[in-house]
Length: 221
Image (cartoon, rainbow, N blue to C red; front, side):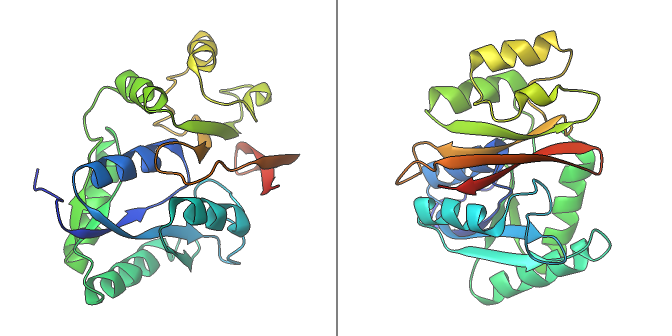
């Protein structure tokens, strides 16, 4: 793997635990964060992957002290919009993109293809690491993440609003899912940790079902 030391980068930012841990590793290895890049829905009101409202992801960026860049797209226009943003990053002197993929080959292949097209080096610090070990590392470092969506039929809605800890991990495994959530079983929002300048306090609102997921709507207190 090429080094990221001394290189400016953007982080593909979902707001969840894997993108956050990837960001942490990039910083620890000497990378210089220039942007958190979040893809939003067509209306620009919620993040495309995790359904987080604009004010929530902006508050994460504020605590992390990293500028945020957002782009809006449908799933059909996602790739060209993503690619356009990366070319703008490259024009601004950003050399690397940081991604939180673990072991899904199709995700890695997509990242490598669009990065090559944009002339950006993809940095994947979590790639091929053992899933459970990454969860343990995330907790041991002191990060905190709230479960904000669950896939219907795989995980009970009772998990919504819970903070990931070892008991939650055990409960997920007892429910028959891989607690890493790498295949979309659930999604999280990181609310505190070593990169954050202050913890993010959330109000829990209604639960909304959309596209096979139950989302917990949250807002900043």
